[in-house]
Image 1 (cartoon, rainbow, N blue to C red):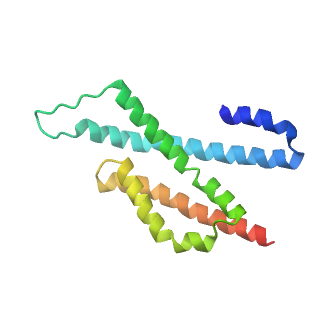
Image 2: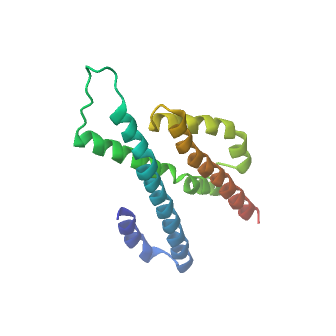
Image 3: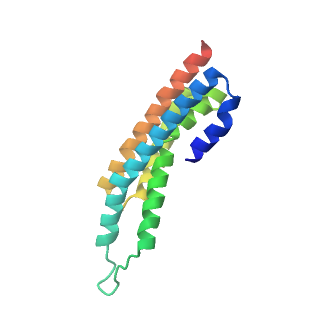
Length: 158
C-alpha cells in the first residue's frame, strides 16, 4: 500500500520510459517480497512453532504461549524472510552504482555461505534439517544475485 501511494505521488513527474522501468521494478520487488513472505509463513513458521511447542527444559517448567508471542514470532519471521528475498534487487542497484561487481560476489561467496548458515541457524530451531531447508533457498537467492550482477555489468559495458 505504501509503495502504491509513493507511486501515485511520483508518477506524474516521470517520463514514459521511466514509468515503464518503475513498473518493472515494482512488479519484481513485490513478487520477490511476497515469495519471501510465503516462504517464511509456510516453511519457517511451521518448523519454529513445532520446535517451540515440543521443547521442554524440565517437567517442572511449562511452556506457556500467548497470542502476542505467537503473532510476534510470525511477524518477525515473515518480515525477515520477505526482506531477505529482496537481495537480488539490492544487488542490482549496487551493481548499477558500481559498488558491487560479480567478481566481488564470487570472491566472498564462502563468507556469504557462512553468513547464510548463521542466519538460518538463528531463524530456525536448532536442528540441521530445518537449518538446511532454510539455507538452501537463501543460497539460491545469493547465486541469482550473482547472475543479476553479471547481467547488469555486461549491460553497463555495452
